[in-house]
Amino acid sequence: MNWLDFRNRFLVSFLYFLIIFLVGFIFGTIRTLFVTPNIGALFAVLLEVPFLLGISWILSLKIIQKFPFPNTLFSLLQIGGVSFLFLILTEVYFSLCLFGLTWPDYISNLTTPAGIVGFLAQVVFGLIPAIRGKMNGSF
Image (cartoon, rainbow, N blue to C red; front, side):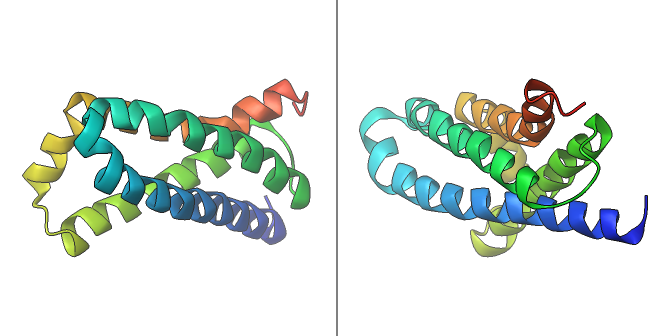
């Protein structure tokens, strides 16, 4: 892998993460303030997840088509994996530093039904570039 490939994969990963993070932050704020009090945390997350994964699905194809890099399974798994890592690290940072949760509180939230659904959605988010690549016959 040369420097240009590495740089493009990193940029694609960061862009994919950043757009979904910003959209997710907006959706999450709406969910937390307005939806969860009315229908509960689990149903609110179940309502939100399809929208975020749908946006991820569309976005991953657009970004992958825009940036030049070897369109292999390994490359797409790297992009998804790095994006997933950015997402988790940012979530942990926001939870601990900005929202004042402790590490045990953060882990405890992940073990609730809503937390499990949310985490699984994040894993799918990380896999979407590879799934899209496979479906498009990229590798």
